[in-house]
Length: 485
Image 1 (cartoon, rainbow, N blue to C red):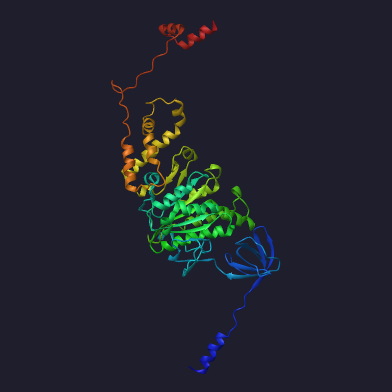
Image 2: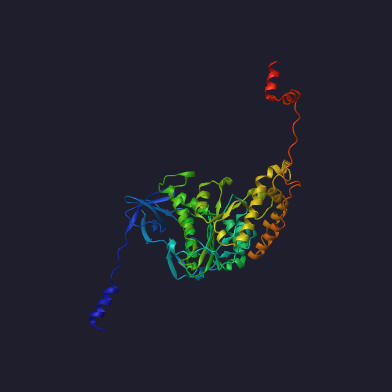
């Protein structure tokens, strides 16, 4: 090796690193940190270094003129005005790999299950890569979820996006646990966003269990973490699902809940000065939710699928809540859970009124689809006339469809109810639904005599009307003449 080559290598090793630009902490207002003198893009991760060695990480969420707005990952303590701020990551990235299977991790990939952090080799941007809509494959294959009400009457397909819409305490978590256990998917990615810490542990231990956890990845960001971490947990959940989908796997992704994600974005948007709109939600919320939902679905040219189930909290049981509305418009269907059914111990409390699967007609043959629609019609007809039936105001024979709904009601309720520990596959569900509908009573035959309806008995005429009719005059005129006289 020549002397010149050795000299160049030595100069390269001894070269000073590029200078790192830093800024200074200007002030902390509410949830935001204002920094001056630092240039960083949106989504960059910065570090605030206090005088006493206290370090705090935060993400850039906005800027104005020469001021950067940061949102800290933890409560901003131990920092003061003039503290140094530097960029440690210019883009928000996350670690990915098969090592995530069977693990419970936080929004930044840190282990929450007591084991060492997953040693993942791949790193990708949290925003993922959008799929060209013309390259997406169609939804044409049934997904067996093991729940009779969904398999039979709200049939799901691989790659569908579905919402579970309900108020609090109606059984969303229980239904999620059933879907996790019984859905026939290659793996499950679960995002527990904004829930109580106790519920996170209870879901993993009781609803999921060791067997379910073995084929799952759980990303947890409970309600006590900052809004920016809750939002990152939602993005990370979608990124993990995309990672395994791109390997050709059929992924089931459960996000509990989409409403908490909207709440996190509302906190961030209001903190940086966005104007509030409906129910205080800033415009960024209504652009974030559709972009999140569009990340799920069938992969490029049918290579892998993400079947997504989002829970949506209907505050005060309001089905017209803005978040419920935008979710309904963006998803491929919704399952409405009813508090009335839950109070009647009807579990899962799936209300067929308002529930729909928009891809069901593409998955079932015409005969099965007709049977399911007939089931839904009779169920809905009974619900609409429930008050008349309960007070005894309805007379049998007035409506043949309602007569059939009343006769089949016990069998329909028995079909829709299902124990949490029981799994019913798709074929068994279809057979059971057909058995219920085949027991539908036939409409009563019309009476003999040409099938004409029997005329109503004529009202007895008053004497003055009878005399008028006998004379051929108008009975109304006769009545009027008598009144005048």
